[in-house]
Image (cartoon, rainbow, N blue to C red; front, side, top):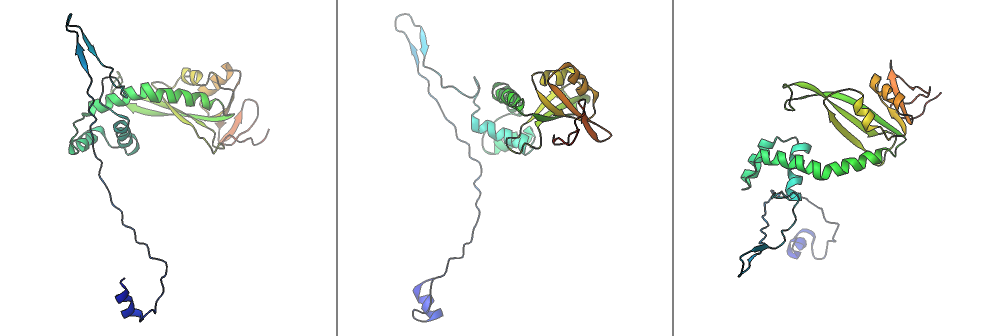
Length: 239
């Protein structure tokens, strides 16, 4: 307020300044697309005509225009916000960027192999450092994997025990079947306790791997073949 307004309200020097009232307004800036254009020098010998091109700047994927920020936007839209790729394709069109859903799907597959696969293997190794882990599997229907549409597959899930509140690790492993070969391979180097349900496959693997202990459940009573009982979080209860 101006000094004249304050004088009119309170009289000459009849006021004191109090802490301001803070009013917030939120603004949203839509996503913006920028294009980095790299010019690569190309040279030719005057005598023999042979050509030489300057080094090409390394990209996220060879022969692909995808950048880390664009890849992150696709991953966030598809896998965090569950936006189908065809809708992301239309959204990018509104920003003036022509990217087909086929290209985006191809990028996700290649990036998973090139980068996320390395992280997955690292976390798989880190998971072995937990004394108690948990495992389960659930059916999923897959439309396109070389089999008839709707064929049943399984998503196997392994995670660090619930009692480990810091540094939780959750790993998903897609497999076409529910047989013992999958946990046998995943847990082959694990030494500790794996909390599962009563599915017999886990106990079959337990008999084959000397350092693996399965704390399974029958009739909601958790136990392992050693007679030790565990809670669902992997905590020791009693002998």
